[in-house]
Figure 1: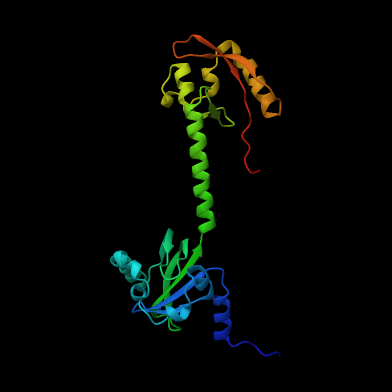
Figure 2: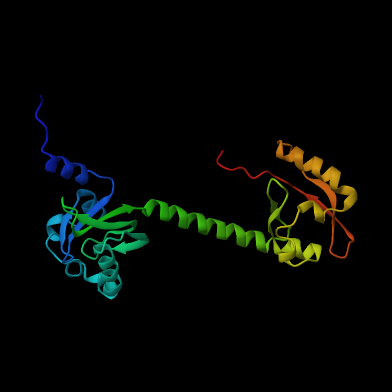
Length: 235
């Protein structure tokens, strides 16, 4: 049989090459293992951390020491703690990133808890993308809400999910009286059929505006020229 890698070495190699940062602490909260991925994320070598209390190694954690120690005591009693998305910067290296993960008990072969193991995932790319999306959505929302044209969106069942202030103003309603209602309930009754026909055509790819009448809150008709376009998801 070919030579086998000793199990301890095999496990160490697997952990060292994990895509997640992995840190192991003893019961005194001293770091006993800091894998290669954690070195990459933090910019700090394992030799600068192993054997040190985490608050000694990372003084910037001191303001949160009470909460962190409470969480760790929970884990040392057998609990598993979730680390939500959190932004961290290591002053030693200057590395700044977002992480999420879990902290679980570390047990010996007899099942006794001898410390903790933390699994951290670098979620910086996702957080930056999320933040960029929120900023983009905010810009577009501000544009819509200050535009002279009225705008609304409706789902595939014609339920209105968004209406701009201008739309409410034109119809004479408050926004909360529009959101969640059937869009065609605001169309003048004689124009409902042709409006549905033209909306269906726009979903199928037809171009160009069309004219029809909306029904204001006081029941009077309001002629509008509408440009409708389908909203497409990733599928």
